[in-house]
Image (cartoon, rainbow, N blue to C red; front, top):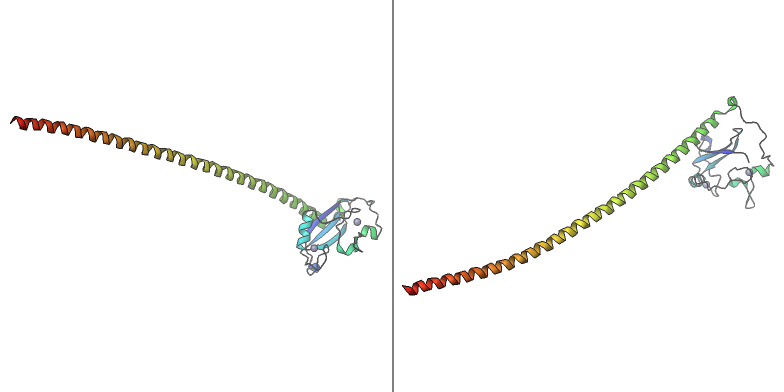
Length: 201
Ligand SMILES: [Zn+2]
Ligand SMILES: [Zn+2]
């Protein structure tokens, strides 16, 4: 099978009012998907796509002809079956043409290659960004867990200190009680002494 280059392009001016070539109904086209032979640079298909089909294409979900690799369009549905141009026109799939020479290479094909290269770069960058985002989320989760644990430890410490204070206060009260008792005893002794002196007078 010939190698093909698919490129999503902006709608050309004469296609501004076009509808989607990939799905039934009259869905408004938002872009074109151009298919080109990698070997000869020749355009083998150029179809309009709606937003939904564009997304499908980007996720590699638009069906392709198993014979030649062209994307299946609704124009090629015959009695509920997809019949690609390659079969309808009995195209010779085996590429016999010679690759295009540098001076024959078309400028549009050159730009399409660039667009595809940049899209790949963008996809790689987005992937890397997604991984980084996940890392950040993991880190945040971890630090949240850590601060939760830290908070619990502090609360536990405060609780045990409060209990200690309570205990100390109780001990303090007990001591105070004992002291009061002793003071009372001393007073009793003193009173006795004074009473004895009084008696002596
Ligand atoms: Zn569509
Ligand atoms: Zn085909």
